[in-house]
Length: 318
Image (cartoon, rainbow, N blue to C red; front, side):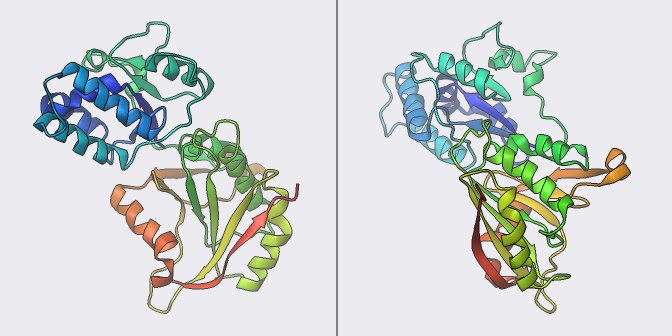
């Protein structure tokens, strides 16, 4: 779904030069699937980049062209970067911290000025221009996933583990049916599991008053969702309804502030013998699609749909 790359501040400091930045501008473009990681922590990482710039260009001032270019680049990059918690502050050097973090909660790759032959995920710019770039530089294609809770959770994990806010939309979700609960449980277990890199994410489930009334969706949600929510957590449920001649509520999505995923069939798992043969296409949304769907289902939903219930919280049973 997405690929996270830890970015060495000393490498990023070089990107004030348009010739150094040109390749990476495309490599981390909005449709590439690659996301930089401002590890460890955004403010500290940005300070390290600026410090590395001034060490490399000691004559530069805060008003110099190179510094202004770098500041603009950092602002643009930070709009879609992943901010991790630092788990190894005892390591003195940035690469040591990144490698230690990678061994516990792997990055897809680590871009550095220094190679580390013992860690294949560590890549230098020279390696990317080789005839055969490192495998870690390759962005996997969108999966044709088996319609099982385990397969969905595995395919979505790179996105779920790095998202601070997650909105799941399924207009046909029935909280009273096990095939929906099984998939939702698998997703929640990943979201709030040990692989989470960004603290405790906020999660919302958006349903639709179509086949089932809002009252029935509410009662079933309160009756069945608590037992699948991990202990100590809660999610928010909202019920929408189409307006006459308005936008349809049909497609199934998982939306985050980083990226979004559309499902061809739905978020429910196949049952019985069908589980061995059925698959679904999970497709990452373009930046334009994500912006539109995030507005429709999150920030401006009242402008597109009628909100017939919620948002209301559902806590875990434990």
